[in-house]
Amino acid sequence: MPTPIPDNHLSASRVNTFGRCPMQYYFRYCLELTSPPSGALSLGSSFHIALEHYYKQKLNKVSLEVGEVLDAFSTDFDERIHDTAWWKDEQPGKFKDQGVGLLKVYHKDIAVDVQPTSVEHTFEIPFENKEWTFTGRTDLIAEGVVREAKTIGQRPSAVKAPHKLQIVMYATANRYEGNVETGARVDYAVKNKTPICVSYPFQVQDAEVDFFLKQVSRVALMIENEMFMNSRHLSPFPCSHKFCGYATRCEKTIGGIVAEG
Image (tube, rainbow, N blue to C red; front, side, top):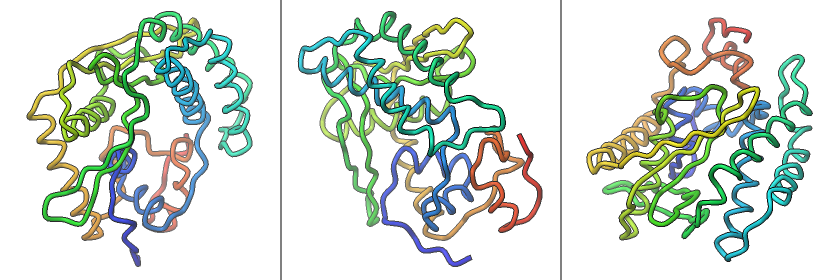
C-alpha cells in the first residue's frame, strides 16, 4: 500500500483513531478518504456545538436560557442529517429528540453552575527531536478544572479510559503553556429513557502526562514506519459495518469479514 504520510501533526482525534484501529487511521488521514458519521456521532457533535455556544456566551457573562441552547443544537443537527450514515431503521427525529432531552438535563444539572475561564482554546505542542506537533483545542476550563462533556449510551461507574486520555491531553497542553489545573472532570449525559447526567472528578498525575507524551511519540513513529494493521480481533471497540464507515474498504484491502452490526 503506498502510504503518503499526512502533514506531520497529531491531535486527540488522530491519536484516538490510531489507538482504535490503525487501518482506520490509514484510510482517513493517509489516503484522506472521508466516511460519513453515524447517528450517534452526529448527535454528539451537535451536543458539543450547543455547549460551545453556551459556554462562549457565559465566558462573556451572558447566561443563555435553555431554549437558546436547544436552538443552537437543532440548527446544527438539522445541517448534519443528510451527511449522516443512518443505520437501517434509525430515525433522525428520534436522535434529535434524544439530544434535546440530554441538553435540557445537562443545562439544569451541570451547565448553570459552571463558570468558564477558557473555552475552545487552541494549542500546539512541539515534539522533542522530531518535526511533529501535537495540536488541538481544550474544550473547557472552569475555575482551574479541565472539563469534558460526553454523550453516552449507558451510565459509567467512573471516567472511561478514552475520555480520561483526552483529559490528560488537555492537561498536558495546559501545563505546557505554564498553567497548572486544580483538577479534572468528565460530565456524562446518559441516553437513558429518562436522560440523566453524572459527573466524575479525578486528578491528572505527572506520570500520566509523561506517559501521554511518550505514547504520542510512539504513535508518530509507527505512522512514519507505516505500521498499519487492523485491530478487528484485538480492540474492545466494535468493529462492524455499523460502527465503521471503512468496513467494506477494509475487507477489500486486507481481507477477512467484518461483522454486519
